[in-house]
Length: 144
Image (cartoon, rainbow, N blue to C red; front, side, top):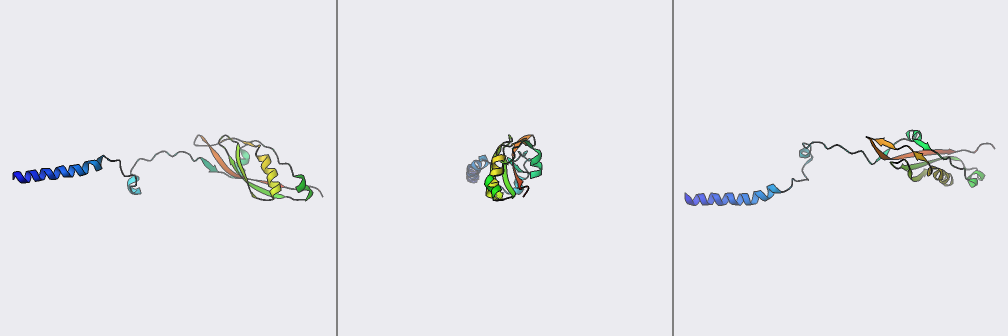
């Protein structure tokens, strides 16, 4: 009987030696989504950038410079819409402009003007965020 008691004690000691280090490790972060869903939800921070329509963007303009019709384009009677993709900083400054479609020369004139625009910050959940939007200018020649 004493011999089996030593054997049981040795078995418990081995199990503890194997199990204790595993129990003291951090939880497995690669656990299945089902087990993770039991954790309390963390409040989500607002996105860093949102996409809004051009009509909403128009209402956010604080100061605006109109484009100057390029002389060469006027001489060649080039006209039509130009559409640009705009990135506005959380402070309301134009950070980036890209011509999406339209005449290159007219697009450059529009981009030169838009670089000078200022917008009201777009606030989401109390935090100003970057805005991505499109702006369209329609260049038309009047008279014959």
